[in-house]
Length: 109
Image: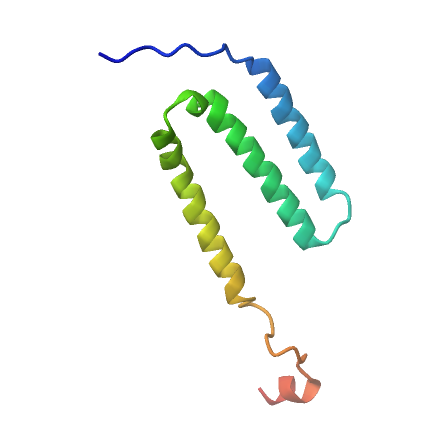
């Protein structure tokens, strides 16, 4: 028979306020005028932090076994790997040679 495990009662209002603060930080990052790459990295980190808070406390993963936590982290790992592979591939929409097109090359097409 499974034995019940006692855990500390979660203060959901504290988690709500942390999520609200992180949301305000996300809005502040957007309006700072930082380079797009830095803004993207900061927004992804803040979103990952918010997602982990929701998963740990509202989905009760903090009190589960390690195996269930690893099952929850698997899609995150695969998603991160796919994003990094796409970034590694380069910019498919821009000119990759580093030389901007001249008027002569654009007129000949």
